[in-house]
Image 1 (cartoon, rainbow, N blue to C red):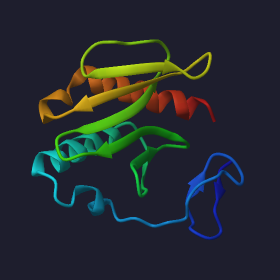
Image 2: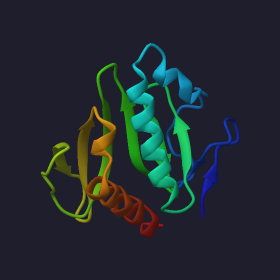
Image 3: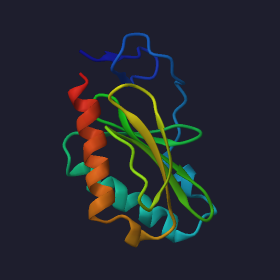
Image 4: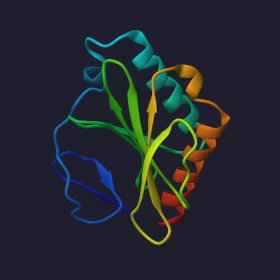
Length: 138
């Protein structure tokens, strides 16, 4: 059962989940940045759409991609895109730059992307696992 904030109409897994009601257009994250940054983002969203129903929730600091909970967080910079996602176990292959166990079943991973070619089968597989982890956690 999801909860919808009565003010901003965003959906959340838990009732009264802390959040900001601010509405931010996704395009704000690409202002003044080279086109490759938007291309990487678009490719990530294209791949995520293949997993099932997703919601894209831009905030002031990041773009959150959710099924019933956030499985992918995207932050844009002028020279790179940084993403965070969950895996069951530690992984340290490129483009992963860091990881931290946050629960018995989840390890939060950070990856840095500066080339659309980095969005390939291995990374897409990790993102699918992240999607499945949060979807199964219903």
